Length: 189
Image (cartoon, rainbow, N blue to C red; front, side, top):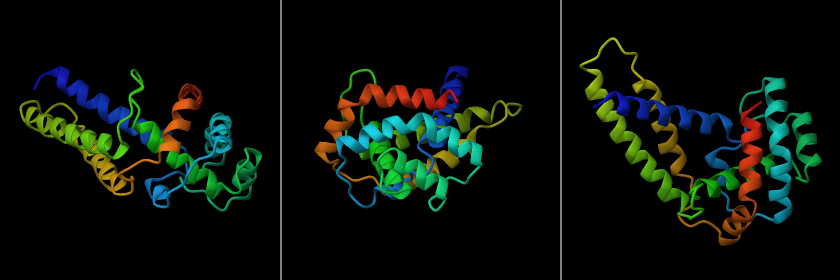
């Protein structure tokens, strides 16, 4: 395997780590266990809330699931959600749908299929990299980070529905650019 392949694997791990850390902070794959049909108001509230949620969570230095914090409850209500729990649930569903869109072509593939393909690809890269690193022991191995990301992905894929609600897909597609812009703004904080 070449240095290019090593760089590619490192990039995948970095992107995966960023995606994991940047997804809305209380949202987990388990939040998608109960099907939610998104409303336009919820998607608009999510887009409006994204720039503020990162700053709020970082300023409070909370763990990833601050579901009972009064300030987080007030935050959710400010953006039209009944509770922070509802915000987390909506956030998780939007993120799952977003994962199914190709950012360049806007073609939609079921998110479960996308994640299963990513697991296969990352596993192949991990195995190739492990073989290559045997010949270059002085390089710090990214294998533990890849294994950790694979474990999270394998756990998360269990909770992703096989079929995504069509209304959710249409709404996320309608607000795709706004969600992407708000996500980038959140990542810059």
